[in-house]
Length: 372
Image 1 (cartoon, one colour):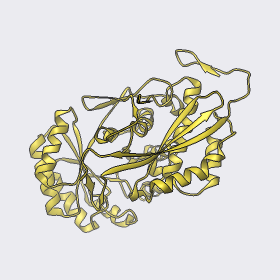
Image 2 (image 1 turned 135 degrees about the vertical axis):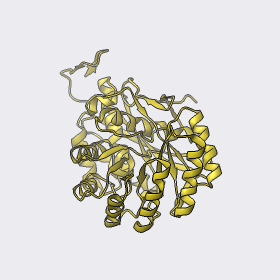
Image 3 (image 1 turned 120 degrees about the vertical axis):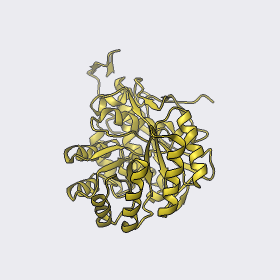
Image 4 (image 1 turned 90 degrees about the vertical axis):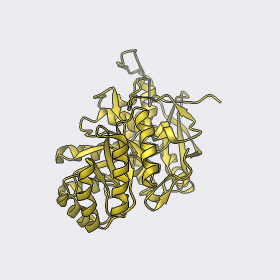
């Protein structure tokens, strides 16, 4: 099977190529700011596993399994889950993504970060075998670039304002502030950043579940003064009633992150009208297929959605970028360039310019290994 230069697929009469083997590589990417944190959690490094699936002809597909403690994932745990699930696809047709994912789900329940890596590697492998960009497997791209929202870690107001200005100087026009669950202190963070960057920069506030509903309502009411577009996950993930109360009381859009952890939870939130928008993430939801399903639910429910903080290597960002480009209902800037603050990334190839991330047209996911 091959594809010509314009992407038309030619299928040979030969038997389908099988997945020959898999390999797992542990990865630690230090943050350029060792004190970077959000409410309740510090992240001096980003730990992960890189999965390589190799077909019989030597073609490889890559996936990235992020090991985020707030997603109940550690690097040893993710590696163990991959070791358990990956044998299910060895010896199977490399083109049969759905059948292979069914085998993966049957091998082990849960473990969405590891399943995301397998899902993404299967897609990357198939796209490379066909000689087409990954977005072609997801419906084709609707745009050549995605507006990027960059994150500001939780710090004192003057330092957050200074870091906000640095990002604006780099061309970014959407910023997300990590806030900490204290209304007075968090409003001062918003005030300092808004005063520093002016009125043209769009702002998102992310309490990371740190508020009780009644305090989140007060914060949302006071945040209106600073023209905040979105408040992300203000209350605990399991406090759906509280989330609904905040949404109904707020004139600012309320976005679910930890509460929307897969397509089913997204459906329940949509059906109860508990939110205005959803933050989509590959590791959290379990891969491209799962995120695509959640995005379709948002579409029919008239909810906003965007790619949230897929923090990790360019490899992870590239997979999320291809899906974002293929979705017709992305309603806000996406958080896909946090790789710029991580050190020692073994992958490269993504282009960021003037606050936009450009969709690569090379076969597969469009990133390559850095030369040694």
